Amino acid sequence: MGRAKLRYSAIGSTLLLLGSLAGLLASGRAAAEPYLAVESGLKCANCHVNPSGGGKRTPFGELYARNQISAQAVTLRSDTKPWTGDVTKWLAVGANVRGGYDSVSIPGQAEESDFALTRATAYLDFIALPNLLSFYFDEKVAPDNVENREAYVLVTPHNGRYTLKAGQMFLPFGLRLQDDDAFVRQASGVNFRTPEDGVELGLELPKWSTQLAVTSGAEGNGSDDRVSLSAAYVQPRWRVGASYNVNPDPLGDRDMEAVFAGLKTGPISWLAELDLITDKSSSGDNRSYATLIEGNWRVHKGHNLKVAYEYLDPNRNQGQDGQERYSAVWEFSPVQFVQSRVGLRRYNGPSSVPITNRDEAFAELHVYF
Image 1 (cartoon, rainbow, N blue to C red):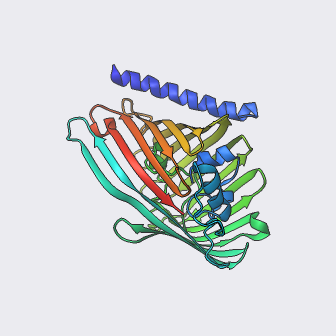
Image 2: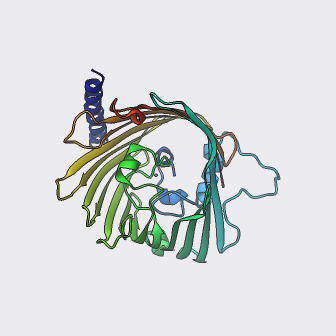
Image 3: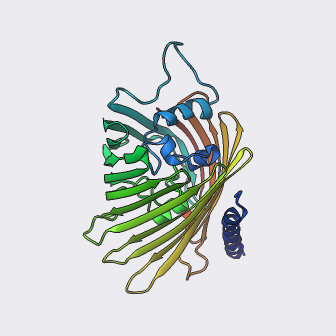
């Protein structure tokens, strides 16, 4: 009975997501944390050095975090300028540090909990020619070993209208969510854990943001290059986009398509994404899909309530294997560059796989500059 209910819920959630996307496309009223881009009506390139989003913030992004996200901005000295990341005309720096408490409860197993440093990253941006040529580095410095996440040359002629990246980078595909454990980030394999070597061309128009990347593939195993294409049409209150990714591999090719959207309704900013994935092999094709619907309610300045529903079908030809994830997260930013997060997540999946029916509770402190 429970499995049947889950299956019907999955069908309903998928129809709801498709309906939401259709509404965005038809009505005319209809991404860092992509909801902030939807809330502000801006593109990723406005707040991040990386035109695709994520990583070090631009001076505008630093000031936006200071004045718009935090409950209040603290100034220690009246004659001190707000921090914008610029050390000199030629060098800008930034960092993110996350850590806290996490508890996981899996049916039939003892509850596990831990306090840990989740991730600390440092950003360096060397500006060789202002507004034209820079060298960007994104390094994970903790926990464990130092690890390079991104390292590329960035060329931005015509005031950033065109962009060219060459080096190691994250791929453009779907919404660039901060949560790498979201189903759309796990199923696609495109997240902040999987950079690749290659080149990316971008075009930034007033209402369009597009990227085309050719990279070596996740394993760099000598197979043909992976091709990623993503485009988004951006309006002040809504946006809609699509992505395509093909990854040739001797063990089996993978094709992925995604449609994603954002909509601002009063104090609530909505996100939606649908990923369709086809893994090809000599024994046949495996088709899967993942969905996300997320709402962010700015209850008060500095306070954000995030709720989300996700569904994952790892094999569309096989029933009774769907998975759901429900999330409720409260985010509080008391002062600039400090954010606390408290959340609960519930997973529903096949009863034969206990880990897909777990409960999670977490508290996180995020410090960034």
